[in-house]
Image (cartoon, rainbow over all chains, first blue to last red):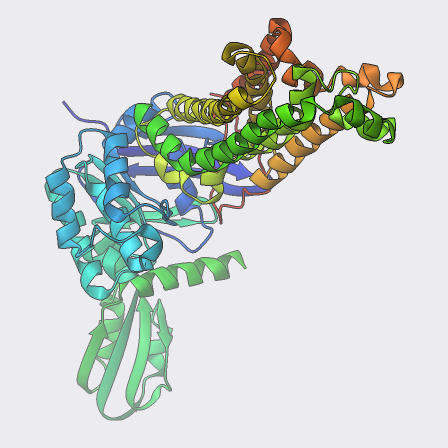
Length: 303
Length: 278
């Protein structure tokens, strides 16, 4: 029997007074996948995640998390979820150990040896008080508490924020291992490289609306490519500028040319064949390029 | 709920001991002082006549000032209701909103704990904390009894503290419900404190101005028996204070059920309005 999707939202809306934070978010996160949630600040990423946990109540639309309605069965939903807020705040006077023990008791069913194992992997000292921790170490506490009960669904708001590169890598490994154990991961991030590294799919939210859901590789590969051409001799390659989707980035006259192309390369390659080519280099865009390009295009469309 | 109760109480113990032991010491000194005052009642009465009645009104009934109940009221319990009321307001207004303003409630409520369980666990801890502060204060007064000439037993001495506890429950409930309705904890505490001080002032001035009697009936201090409860507790007044406190608490629970938990940066700090019901 097919299990319901891990997360489904339909026409989810939420306003804060006159500010419309979500304007009809449609989203589906499949079981067992890692989905990255991208968007600029204020786009609605955190608001969406908080609706999933019934921390805030949507004005309209429907939400299902693991087949459950968070408003009707909030405790059941939260029992299956591990949550890392974007701005993690813990009681300053507690030690790391007492904070984690308290959260473990609150959740119930947490195996302390597993907590110790997670802390060890993240090189997290349990003795200091929370108030004496750096931002990165506080973030490690947040990661441990989100993973400590082996949740079915991980909702992570900027999980690697404040971590050094080594710890960032370790957290990404932990997320990958959680997925390998059957968990679904839905996480927001501003670090495109890490989304590209671990997420199978990406949802892009802009101004309260999901504007794109795609496989990470598709999104990265579909849009802009930079092409650098070196000719055997100086040529006038103005004709290349007339190929659909091509924008010339350097002068068309000379022995070298740089251009970018959006969409398929077929027509461009055929056009290039008319010139004496010494070398041709196509640079695959990073997800960041795709993201920036996507927003750039939409910004100009929207005026 | 047990975990929340114990954890909340552990966060309050320093305030409980600080306020409780301070008022215990003050209570002990006040009760003990009755012995010294008892031999000079005539001189004291003469001295008090020199004060304007508006000032004396804040110290209770001059005629009864040298009875055990009147003495306890004027030298200790009357203003204790006001000062410990401030503690109740601080605890009540911060019970949920201090964590919310600090950004901690977002994480706690993402755990499998219902809003009702969180609310109930914290309110239970608040009640225990207030009972502990009042019990410590009573114990301090009780320690002073052997050296004083008040001539009352421990049971009779406990009755004003039952009345005090009811007043504190009302103050805490008021602060709690205001914290759910107003945009910040500090504003809720300020409004609750204004209500408390205004109630105390109106009730005191009503002793010398009959025109204020009707307004004074709205003051919780009108139903706080203070030291006079040693002669017998008015259970209806006491129950009334507790009932109003309970109504405030239920309203706060209702609001918390429907509330959007706020976090900094969400753009909701200025908008404490309720979310739509389910």
